[in-house]
Length: 427
Image (tube, rainbow, N blue to C red; front, side, top):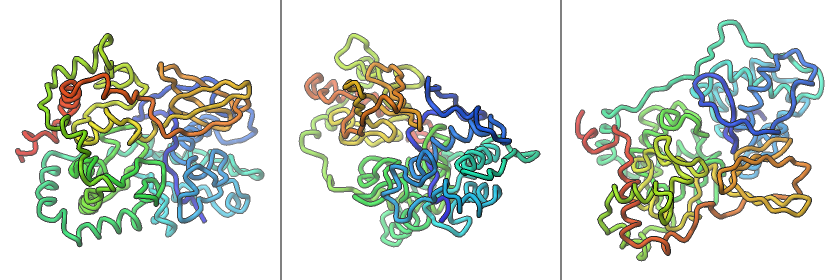
């Protein structure tokens, strides 16, 4: 069994090239300098960062196949530290599997391909780090001459493409044959089901998509599936290399998933029916002396805090129902990568924050004030992920209906140009 899944962990990383630089956690990471290896140390360190970010949630931090997502998979992830694995796989075989994915090497579809996401040099660094799990007879890894160091850019989704999808969706999007084709791709052909949950099935890495038809617009889902890195460079989701037709089918399938909440709760209707003022909403969002001061935690176009997720293009990426639910009931849908953890130290101290990093030496979190903390493993007695949000849950008491509608109107106004009604009306 080989490399079933390599995807994201809740980690920040530093890698060269087109990927944006992210914080280094003081005290984090194993010291690889003392390992007696021929493989270049720089390659090992880069590979470790990538492995923690993309692979550890399934394969485990030490490659033992015991990552937190492993229990949700139909097939167990490969035990990369196993001596048989290490002895039977050549460096080129490991490289090819990471690049082409499970289907590309006639293995499980649950293992996504990273050839459209990572550069060749980054994939080789992953090979180097995976080799470091071997107990004996390590095969050294070096970058081949002329290896590509630039990440694939992928094809950007154009205004014309989005308009074409919308026209197709009106005609074909709700047909049973279309939805069935999308379901087959999602569950059995592509790697979606390994990372995303539908009801009680599927992985727990990405967001739960059981209510995706309510929470996301179909044109956004289509564009995101086509090239996720174009909209969020540091996203956990790899570019799966789907064709335009495949992206259409998957978007149609996900649009049909309404979950249990098929109707908007009666209590939310006044907020959705009110006419909001986006300028007033922006003032409330950024006012440090206001009732809510959203920008303390959230940023828009680089302005604001980094505790919560950025809200750039929120009006494109999220439906009005999703945005309202996030304001009034923030724990209902917690954005992937922003789960709260409660840590109990051995000296009986409780520490709460959003987990951003974990490796064999400790856990990095961001607390509610935005302060980065690193707690070493030897200090931790136990910790668990909580089903709560760091975002206050009392906005319904702090704000009246009009103020909520104003903030909602501001968030809805944050749209990507190619998704605006004016842009999509022009071919």
